[in-house]
Image 1 (tube, helix red, strand yellow):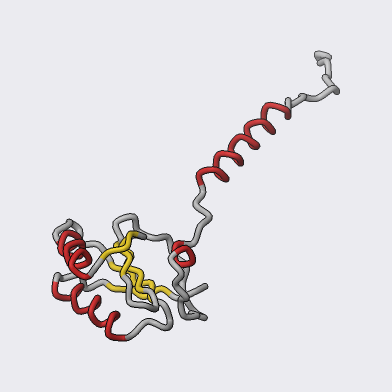
Image 2 (spheres, rainbow, N blue to C red):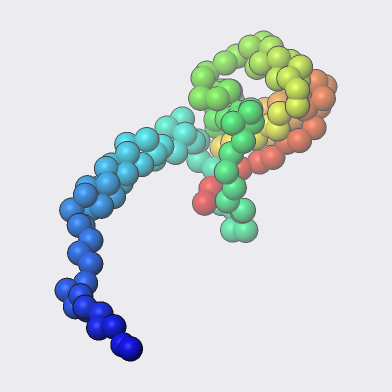
Length: 135
């Protein structure tokens, strides 16, 4: 005995308006919260070109030191003198785990300033030092 089933040929309607609203809200949220600035450009640092540089997400505990062409030091985008730089590196060396150090160096900066920062990092046991080049 066959039972006749009613077929619903109309299909299922999915309301798209609420889904589109959610997508636009997410898009606006990500656009507003995304950081679209380049700190090395704001500080006036002309980074050397790096053809094979790997793009990676920055570690939030990473100490970023920028060295300008005139020999000024910026730690996490704040202008510091040599004594303040040493104090910040000393504090960073006491953190657990020991943070990495990234140097954003202007291509016209003197090697003396670079060596000074690298020696200070090594003095305090900050041995994971990386240099950043321009994209």
